[in-house]
Length: 185
Image (cartoon, rainbow, N blue to C red; front, side, top):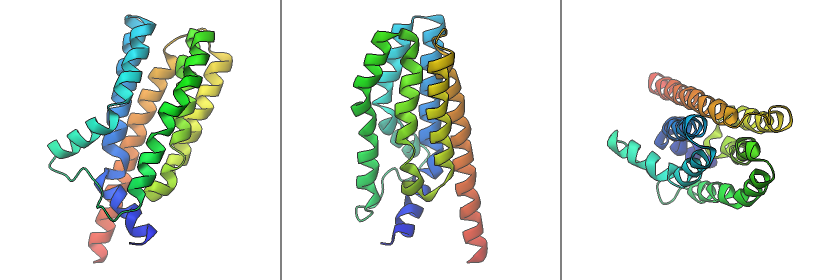
């Protein structure tokens, strides 16, 4: 299997990130809502606990849609996807330290950790728009942490909306690619 074939399978199975991004974006929006109208602690708990379930929820949604939810065993990018996923829990101690120092740094800190984890998606999916998503999340986290640390959930709202938007973009790009492949065949 070539790299291009492996990336095509990742794009096809995961719909260019559409479902995963919608699940993740919905979780961020739920967390921000709870952090805004409930309590910051509950908002944090929702994002941290729910974050561990994003991949499982994505697979469930794909299966409910009648789609395959896993890559073929011979696709070497499956191992890369797992390694990328583990970067987030490895960054949580840093998010925790930032949050203990200043509660309102929770969302900016986790935006940076999660945003950085999207950079290898450029190779995993073979889709450059993930570099833009990475830059927006990392840059947004830095800006909010430095200049808007007077508000708690703004980063959660912004990230949720951004993830939903980029999920839609990834889905549309993959759909366009699939149509172009069918018409040329």
